[in-house]
Image (tube, rainbow, N blue to C red; front, side, top):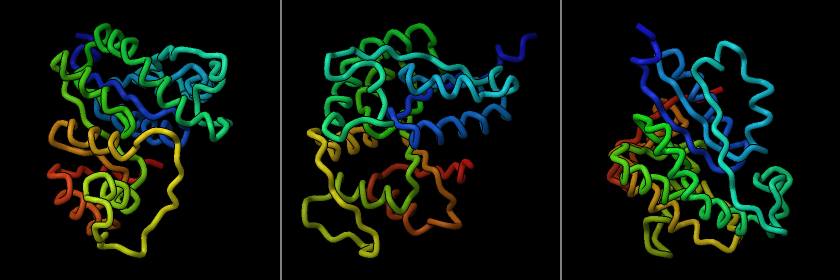
Length: 224
């Protein structure tokens, strides 16, 4: 019998940034050791470098799926990535990805995976998966400490006290409400939230996140 017939098939949908795609790819490599077939879905400009570096061994279990994002005069295909993207186009890039929702839906229909793993800026991805009775879970590639601050601001009322004052970030406006996106991504995740971390390293943040989101936080390691 073909081994792939018994494999679990996972569609991965990272945000359009190499810093996000890389952890998804490393997770795919880790899962390939456990009889998983993974499909990484992104824009062609983001997938091209992966095509050049993916080993023949990993190419058997890791497939690249091009997501055709609508093009505009201000957002041509080479800007369908955060790499080299002018800051003022970050909001338009997020909205362009939103407009690719029907394309993503068609990909889901074609592949019919067993699971969808998505990033924290695409709250419509789990909705599309749910319409097809496919479980979906959000994957945070930023670690538990940074994610705890982001999710605190996404779930708590403005001005509420954050319990780890040593952690902070500078807020940059992108023309989209990312806190709403992040909260919806977590709320629509199927019972669990995957996170690039170790409990031994960030246990207190993992516990905080579990209490905050009412989800089980699943550490997947450093992925390096």
